[in-house]
Image 1: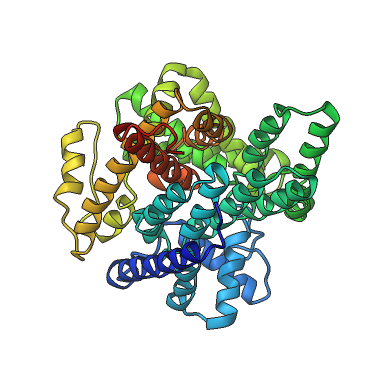
Image 2: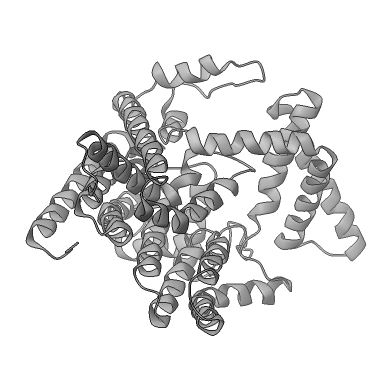
Length: 452
């Protein structure tokens, strides 16, 4: 595969402009309307932190306390945008949208690194250019776009060459991604295991693992040191406690008591608040965020340990949601005439009907939903073909062996709460494998043995 060939350069220019047009239409006629660009409560927290950074208050929250609930990467991007455009979120989102047009180009490069095949790379780039999830989140105040750019760069550098220099660089890029979304340490673990199973001497494998880890640590260490100096503990952020209590533990209690989420969540949060007050009375001071997070985690774990079957069941449901949910669920939630009131008695048919017959303010969302459904079916079919092809094609099997661990990782870690945006990191891999699967099926139908 010759990336710099004249035909590929022309193709990538076309893909960039196709991506821009697709994203711009979604942004202008849907996402930039009303409050559709804001995800509650994430966007407001990122924005307020960025404002404090611009005003010279550092990474602090709305109360002026050190921000530990969110990572610094995306607020830094927003703050840089505020320096350029002032308090104009629309201009900042246009910049983000422009950057998101790089994603299909990076998908093209990653497909080329994995398969060395122009056709697969081009199919993947076209899908990425008109991918609904990439288009929607390009114009939202969220981490997805910025994170995916650096995560794709990590994959490209990591899989392209395994020299010590390239692995150190891959670690640094992963470190940047880790400061945007807290998944770098999981990715580092999987990558280290893959390096451990390479055909090389023990010393060579150890050096590679050390170089990858050193590059990652170089970037994330200042943030960890900052948190340690403030709390005496090493951690990335304090979201897990609240997250697992209000989702994982709440779902288990719902199963146990046959109750509704709206009734369970306030009770658990009240228990958390009571436990915090008791601990504050013991230590004689207000607890910092990490201590509050630890209490929430303890409450959630105790509930889940008491009911292992319900824990496994609800985790499986959330993972299934991550695999099958649509990206248009987010704008549908914010653009619909009314907030959906689901109960334990709400049927699957009712939930599906909400997508097929949506009641929304902006009609562009309706064809967008149908386009996502069609593209999703196309991708799933291609991915299934890819899995079948791996049984007969050693090249495909080798790619699957080195990439499926990442897919499994990012699906499994959504066991607490599942939605489409949580599979964002591995969506490019699914797109690439879908393209490879369809190419393999085409070769099978044409009886071409050397289609790759």
